[in-house]
Image 1 (cartoon, each protein chain N blue to C red):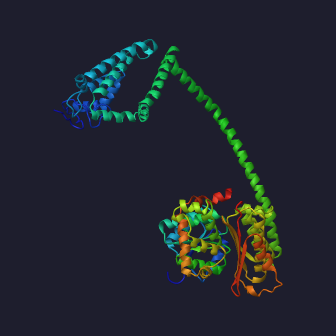
Image 2 (spheres, rainbow over the protein chains, first blue to last red):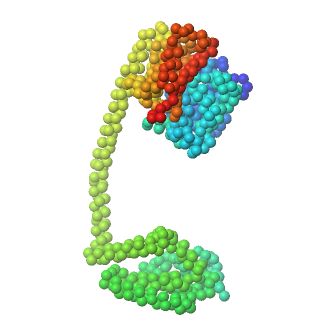
Image 3 (tube, chains in turn cyan, purple):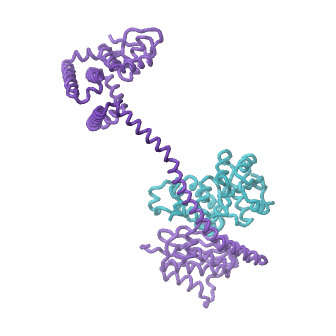
Length: 217
Length: 421
């Protein structure tokens, strides 16, 4: 990737798309946009952008369908999930399907641009809220000792990863996390990426059914 | 000298001698052997056996006889020869014959009319099969064992031992015989039982055709009515909520369109409330109908700060627990810290992170505003010391306030959970 990342917008609300266009103009190269699932899949595959900003809630299967269809043929395209909702099951399931990050739509322009650059560089973008969801998902259910004996490597976070996620959930930027723990920003990024990988690979019952469980209790 | 025969029949070319097939035998390999001997298709022979079985069981008898008297391919002696060479087998066969005859005559008054000549054929076959079992070679016996375990009743029973066969098969056979006998008395199988069954089936079919539509209609009506009622209730709830909150807020926004800060504040607060209502109903309930959970308390702090100070709050919660005195104190200390941040830091947003673990409940309040020198607080300013630190230590917790001038403040509040909760 040289210069500005090529970004594709998928959202069924015209207002949101035009807002994003204005915010992003000049900072990234816009590769195109789509307002429905089938068109989005076709155009993304055709134009192969670096990053796709993907609305989670769209008709006809929504963001999930786009993510699955595109990653099947073009696994190198990176997705950043964008959503107004805070329904944790949507967020976690998108990440598990392969999105590299999640931000809410009320994120500020510079923050969004920063997130896009991070995603384009291959990093994961964890907003405080996502970090909270992940911590919740990995710690719900059995007590920690029980998890350690039963679950596999993917099914639990290392103490360091937990520490990093906690700081992110408290509102620390990656740079602040690095300072606080006296490690490099690169190390923070690698911890976050590893959490993302675990999130995608783990078969933990709690992860797949976590959201529905949460609504029951 | 063992004689081995061709493996498949060649159409139109008879091949001598007649031997039972050992390679693809279903039972004794008689049909296959015959097909090879006559140069016809195997299936033709099988169909002929089946048809002739209808004539007083002739086909079955012929099959058993050929099984007994034809040597198996690759073996020197037929089964009959094998049996006749062994004294013990001969005696056993004789006993079997006697048992069969006795059984025949004792069953005679009971169910003889049922089969007539069929019964004789059946008995002869049973005796013949007994002979086969005694006289067959080890290899063939093995094959028959495999066959037996594939047969529905015998197979599942033999897997559990011969005792199971006796326990399950014998009562079954007796019941079938008794049942047939009863049918016989009321006019025979074909005379009464079959017409009666057919009549009953036709009757049931007719009734089904007549009454099913009516029944389905009733069921459908009931469930659609129920669904409609539920939908109505949901609609009423949603409308009520939208009217109470969203419409009110929109009106307020219209009125205060001149003040940007007010519009943002109203929109934020409405967004937060709607979000809670949609995705975190327990928090919504907690805030609006009296708080009884930790997350509810923290949600109330977010609500208060955003409404009263117009500062954006980024709230993240992990886990939840019921409130008690300690939890309330923790939340109160957190509220104090958040208000301080909103009032003095000058930051446009503050972060609150609440986590419930097995051992601790923690609350973190963070801003990236002005910051201050922790050691230089005037002695008369009691906020941090009394409202935060002392409050926490009183309930067995601890508070850590860190601040750097120019880069912001972090307040960490940790409360150990009681063993009982």
